Image (cartoon, rainbow, N blue to C red; front, side, top):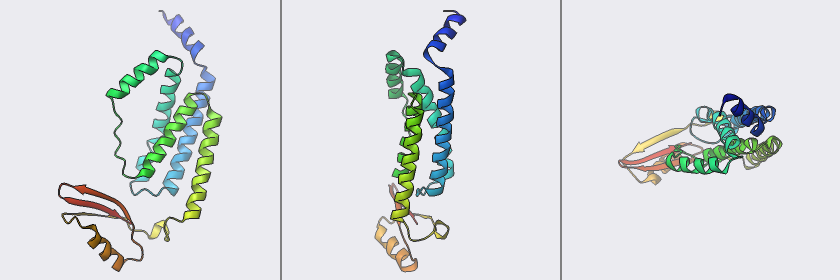
Length: 189
């Protein structure tokens, strides 16, 4: 196949203006989601660092879906490749997983040429999350008044730590508890 035939095949399968529109929509939606997550997310992890992956993940998903949507052979090849290469993210909080699924959803819908569906869905979901956040008031204190700290101890009885904290703090919430070879690793607000 020569270069002219390759370009002709490319132009017949991918509409470049629509592809660039999908790129722009996926970028804007992933940046909007990033801003929302940084501002309203409840995860203990570094939300700024974690959410910096939203745009590349959305755009990569868009690219993959754009390429494989017209070829069953490519989609089967992708399944084979993904069975070899596994995505291992250190998810510390279920909230992080929810945002990753939403980012993948942005990439899937824009890659399948549904930018309006992606926009309506993401805006609706963010509005519902904002309303839920407002109604539930997950904590009684402002974020500025919170102290996040980690306890790494050979003592595995968490109740003793919780009692000490409750005796000395107005508000205590256990965010994460991991059992290690040497004891426990607990994160509190």
